Image (cartoon, rainbow, N blue to C red; front, top):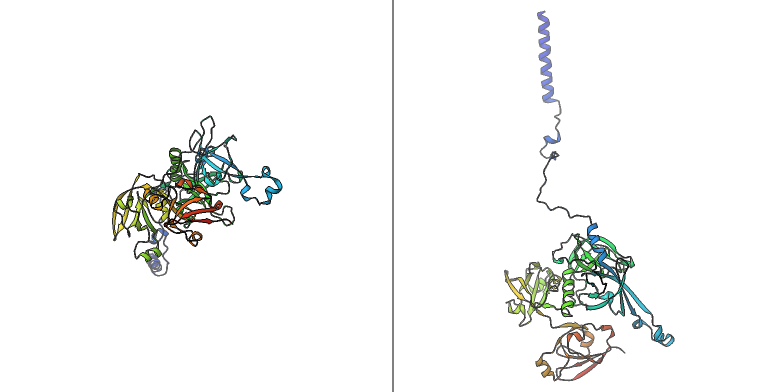
Length: 463
């Protein structure tokens, strides 16, 4: 018996020793993902996320669409096509057979009594305008006023009832990446709604045309017929008037452009109140900075508006701004390019004050500038201004416009330069900016000028 217990004890000790040796020297250690400090940690189902993060914007557009479709109308512009007819047409068919040309677009009702905002190019050269609402009722519209510079026109219909309309939103408060809807009548498909985001702001499509363009760029689908329609946010507020597309084929390829609602609203209110657009002038001359311009002026800043000169006696000059100053913001709107500055000022009136932040010699300053009425315009690549009493006496004339900047190479080659007067257009005397504002430069036949020495010169533009 004793030998049995002795043998069992030796076996048990040997087994324990064997297990210990195997565990220490031969078994591969197995670890779980939670054992490794570099592995992802398991998160309990009741984990609380960061409540301070911004929530995603709602993507249910039904309410915004419902608020908008009944306030967007179809605009039909009927005009005669005689300007494009060959000369033999009248000879064979007579004046009574001149065909009509019909153009279509969209418009937005912005008041219950029938005021409509659309694009100027939608109703240009019209002989009659017909409005069709979303409930298929038609009305004759009258043109209250237009502003070709912003491509905005104001129409009026009499419906004898209150009409659905869209509220204006604040286009300055819109953000890149924000959801928007485009509502209009592409290809005569009434009440079409498309969605997209704001792709860019303050977009200038043609920096050489001397127009203060500052479009909202979106990727909402816009095609022919959408012009003059509404661009709205997810609350159904009007933040833009759809105006143009960028395309090699004439069809939508990904980008569309809208006049900001703050600009459209200001033009609308000016036309209703004054009959014309009142524009405020800061009184600075210069260029928007980029790397190339900054190198030319030997400055470190690559963003902002670099002042090269000021118009004496206007707001910026009186507020203490000087040449070589760099405007960084206006009323908190950061100025990265010229369209940022011109677009914001286009929503302001003469007499209003703006807060300007600028840099001088590396230091930042702030001042308040009063905007003055713009007393000049660009006509046929000439910057012209009304004559002062002193200029009328000096030139010995009681009418005409003063040419302050000549950018028309054709006229310059014929000897017309800064300091000349523009006296007549197509045989009609001009005396105010309104006399030339809506003239179509493609219809110009002759211009009469007067030199500083008093010599008059007629320039024939069509042969």
